[in-house]
Length: 367
Image (cartoon, rainbow, N blue to C red; front, side, top):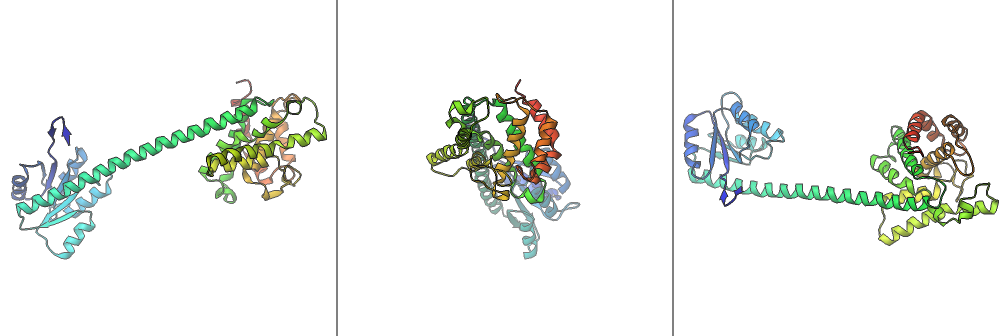
């Protein structure tokens, strides 16, 4: 380690319960290294726990109390000391002893009689390997931190882009920005409830639910392409006008597809966004639009949005209707089970209806 123009000497912990061996090793090492000693396995573990950690440990095998194998095993089991290299120093020179040493986590095994030049060469080699391992670990930590930072940046850019696109649709519609926030949270709450059901658990992993939350604001993106005379009409639409209104699903899907084509690659959350934009007006009995899909042919993402979108529309004031109470909205959704909505999703909605009501209050249009 460099400090200004000086280089700090590496620290070596020598562990042996024989004073003569500790003195011998200290004499070999002290000119090149900072030496610490411990006269038992128990004391060595306390020195390591107290810190600072040595750069390497020279460890006797046969000691009173905790032997060297156990000291090494405990070191390698502890994340704080696992990276400290251990070299065994011992009179035991049987193959099985050496094998056990390496199996316990040692990087080298030196047997008596100890030759100073050999000990110094082995220590120097292991310290070189440790410096390289530390460098690579530091680089890896840096890269992980950088990847995390870039990932957070990308996620933030996604969020801003989605909200910007969704806000563009709001400027043309009679709905509010809080409608977008409410439906996001409704969809996530419903998905988290369904995640506990084995029938839905695989399809609704944590990442998918996160992507659903990101994608939900784009469900009505296609309304940007609908004329104000239809989009903002306070009264009932004529059949011809309703046919035009129905095209907002296709317009939304195509707009997202165009954005994805411009990127030149598939983006996970945009796949869900396309499903939601295109199919959230489909109905369980096949009477919805634009394709007249029925039952499980409707993507789960769109079925989730159907419940969230309708509930919020029912409890909200629109130019063409007053707001319903929560209880009235729940009653209508229950009546739509098996016709408009997936019955399993309605059951989940009923179970967490208080969460829906809490979300509606938190993101009310008055906030």
